[in-house]
Image (cartoon, rainbow, N blue to C red; front, side, top):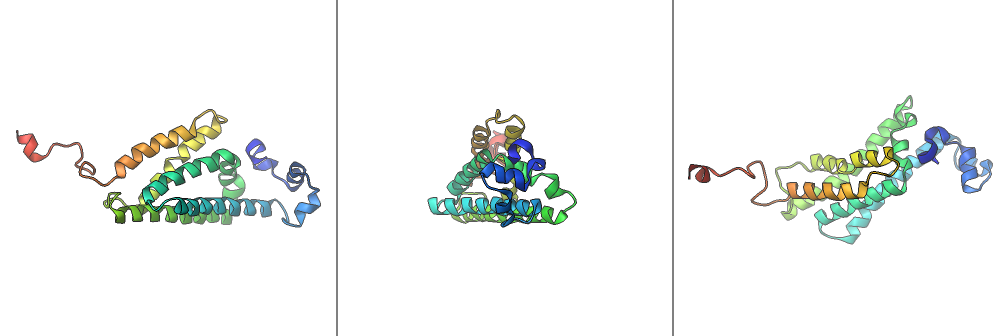
Length: 195
């Protein structure tokens, strides 16, 4: 509904009709549209957290967990096209600034969980330690967000899954710990330059 008509199409009557209920049945759960928006934000956060929990159960390798988490993040967006319309809507960023702060806190908590995977990868020696886990977590989110926007505005024509996978390949190579990584990578050593 939100993915088709935006937030203006979100009202208790329309939602009730869509799920085959009478509006009074929804009023038992939500006082109004604001209540539904708040519940949607809770649902988005619970799905993000569920994805983190799921990848923790799938593997002990934190770098592999990040790759799996990226895939789950893409799937969440593809299967719930209304999420970007909710998160970036006027109802969230407009006059009710409390919701804007709530989304900020939601994203901050999610990024904190992602940063923990990077810390664990650094402790395991698989990710460069000269990179900040907090900054890496923002870059990680950036692997999918632009592609998700392109997917959304192209009505699904842009392949967000393929783009996220390619971006992960480049990103994971850039952050891997190893002798050929870091600011000096690709430069000749002083001994080599002299010869």
